[in-house]
Length: 275
Ligand code: DGL
Image (tube, helix red, strand yellow):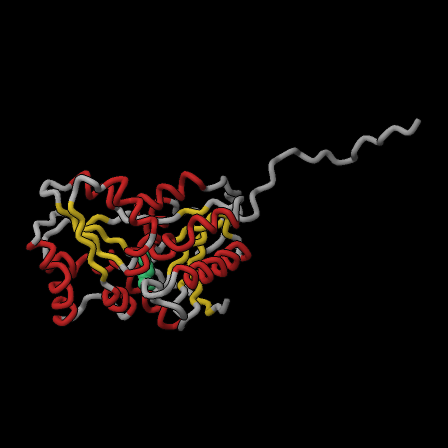
């Protein structure tokens, strides 16, 4: 009878590290960097991949079908680059694509973002909250669901402000004219008695200083909660598998690199990627 020979070398039995352990983050442009900085603060050891779809920004004025197509292509790109978790750091993209993508990629944890109506509805004393957003988010079923679930007892004033996405992509609220735009959008909310302002677009936290110049409304931003959710779904990784954070844009790499430095203080190489 043949007996198997004893192995010459004994191989310790360890679980192989997961191959895809990076956090992939996507947005139409620079807005998702407001979520990325929270992820970097909470999970400084985990490498991230960021994709800015600046060839198609703004998403807010596009159809749900078009946005879904872009997000699907970016998700495939990020998985191919090593992402094991995908963060849709964009309200418009989450509204258009989170549910279909979960069916399409059942083994990849997908973390989306939804308008932070719940904390604002809990915190309001006047019973009136303002929501600053884009058209695609305001039109989406996700926003309707959030309103029905958390805000049936409060008055919600929705302000669609695509000009603020452009303002952030172009550098932020820096001029007197920018403040005039913010006043035009925010003053009616204050006049109507709003005492909370939900930032339902990931570009808008970068306008925090300008928004505070024009009113004293508390700003409600869900990005830290998104980072905590990423930490919950993240698979353990091999601590020796060191890697750097990487940045991609479908637009102009030099312009994005400047925004990266200005908005979150990162100075990194940016790769132009076409999908
Ligand atoms: N930052 C995105 C959001 O949260 C998209 C804005 C846009 O491209 O219109 O909705």
